[in-house]
Image (cartoon, rainbow, N blue to C red; front, side):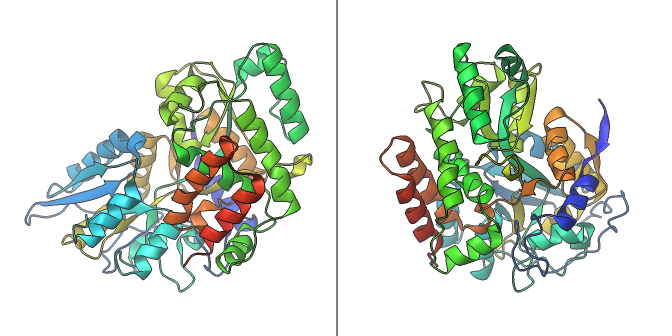
Length: 436
């Protein structure tokens, strides 16, 4: 398989694009934990930290929500243990009600060693004293300045480490597009509407949708907010201050949601995330809005699927079509952990070229550490084509807290079932975003 240095190109993007959410580190992408720092390999070295020498065996408990990456992470942590024999990592995974369970663990003083979350979640946990500030740990220097800017809070803290960057857009089946006579992925709402008409004329279902898993619908709202904002960070700050998020561009963006929701698989209302991936992989639908994280699962279903990845058009101006690209979820160390030094040794290894390369080769993701080389694939190449053209926007959901993202699920399910209007959605999500 062809190899390509993925993140070097991404870092070039981050310097000059809207992805730099705060030049002074006053916004962010994701966050995590520790405070006492171990020695780490310089970013330019590929050697890993030395194996743990003697000492009592330590088992780290990591409470995570990315079920689809469980096997990949288990394989990654086994490689770490091979080099650090006295440290093992046990995974507890909950992809249904993660934040509810996490709050229960906090209340019952039953915290794991490692947790994960978006920037907004970890900011909240860090400010409440539940996870450690990693900003002074030496391995944080393994990230580029641009990536660190997405990890840093307004007061200079870093609560988590991301392993990868990711994109959010629309997967499309190239064979079905060819069958319907569609020569290129749509860049405008009019082109999207025309593509849908061509697909339907050829008895091809245009979109897959997973209404039963509300987070997938919430993501369609988050990309609409980001894809129609002039400045996502400024919009988030205004929303937190209680201001309206409504705009003519956002209202027009809902026309794209209507095209997706109104031309979905007949079983959309009962489909879950895995069912929607199967529909795309098996060629039963032509398109699916999802993130890059889904690619490995799609290919596991059908390794021969010929797919592309495009930016979601929210207007009739082709220049407005930009792909959502951001550092992905981050991993944090809890203040209640009795094994903080062991957890930091793991984080140190995961941020070396060797450790980050192993993790992303296993997960089939785009590395967050610059200069790491992993196997390429068509979807990563498509994401990087937007990156190189600086046609990207940051994610809006990383600037929300977990409760807002959860509330967005029911809000968008209400929109799908026509129980809420676009005005209702914009008003309700803004009100949730403003909650302290």
